[in-house]
Length: 181
Image (cartoon, rainbow, N blue to C red; front, top):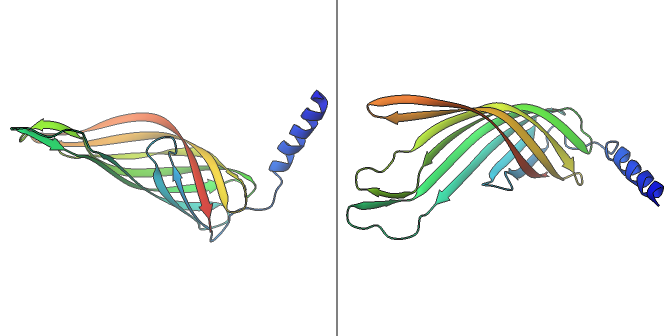
């Protein structure tokens, strides 16, 4: 029984990589990443069989409960982000690993209750990094994947009279899903 199971598993694993070609030049994919957190919407376009450009757009909204009182201001939190990725796919097979670079600009305003006149300004940041990922094509038009990034996050603060920038290096792993036309 174990031998039969092992043979079937090996056959499945070896045939996955030898399937027909998947999206190439001119294909457009709509999708999301960060399925397990606040998702970004993705628009991916293959400019050649292996090179793709991807536009990233996302938002977070935070509405604290309760009402403000005299001398207190209630602030709703908002985050808007947009970016671009350049991705090189190594194959056009069912499992398609890729390597790329990504840049995302974000502006964020913290939600909460603040004394009138002390509400925080929005904070801007730029995240730029290297991406390593893979897409698994369930069929010719639909894929799921995983993306690992190593990035630098540069936070720009514009608090008068001091203006400064923060610098962080980090990693992130997100799940992705796409539908190709």
